Image 1 (cartoon, rainbow, N blue to C red):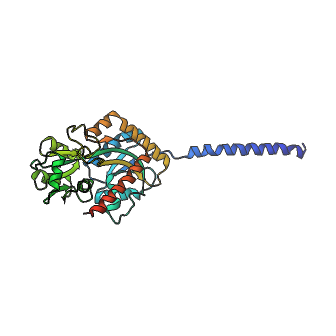
Image 2 (image 1 turned 45 degrees about the vertical axis):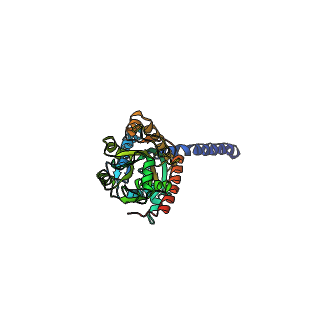
Image 3 (image 1 turned 180 degrees about the horizontal axis):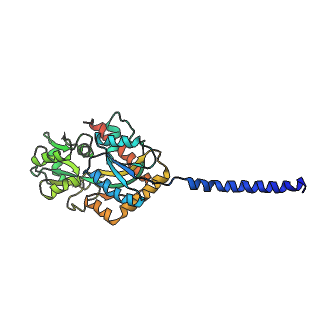
Length: 331
């Protein structure tokens, strides 16, 4: 056979091999792509076991783990108004195996603390909102105020009133500070180390009022140990249908709620964020989960990562303004 007759065949064979090689590249990559998740996932909570954030986290973690096919293990890393847990997650590998229950407190901390070992606004990848929980304005029953108007009248008097909180910089504290600003009230803040001792002194008459998370204070309202004057959400709560909102009580637009969400370290792959958001929304749509959240006075809030990012940005600005105006410093 002549050499010249072999040339076309060689060119055809080289082209064919080249074509096969190129076709094989995507297949090889698909075969070697790392699936997720292949091991347990750690969900960090910045507060102690038994609190509202922990209860919400454990409620979601169990169902989320079932949907992902891997356990989602809650890890309570407490201290410094959730900053210890947040910093641990911010510096964790961005591989989808460490998540964080990001709350309104993290947007507060961005302005409350001058120095942090992480950036609350830049070091996290939003996944999705879980739920919102309103606060209640409650007073000691001995206080002669049956509604918000009567409370404001007392608070605007020269003697003013005192209000308790679970600590300086907490959302419970900031609810009171925001109300103090919009109502032009003379309210003296009395910080405590936690909601429980604050409620004890409120019921004992050592302080006169408090803005507290609805789940914490609801049993005392039902028992008649405290009087609820208003709720801080835009709508009334089905658990307390006769308690008006602050917006209805002369302060339109007043809407302050604690909220809980899922976030991951910044740089977590987009595919992982998308999968987590999808599964989280499915968990929140389950009737059992939705009802258990409502029983805690929490409203399930399925949504997108972009919606959560918008909420974080808006809340950070709002609390930065309140902290600056009120001159609030951490304990």
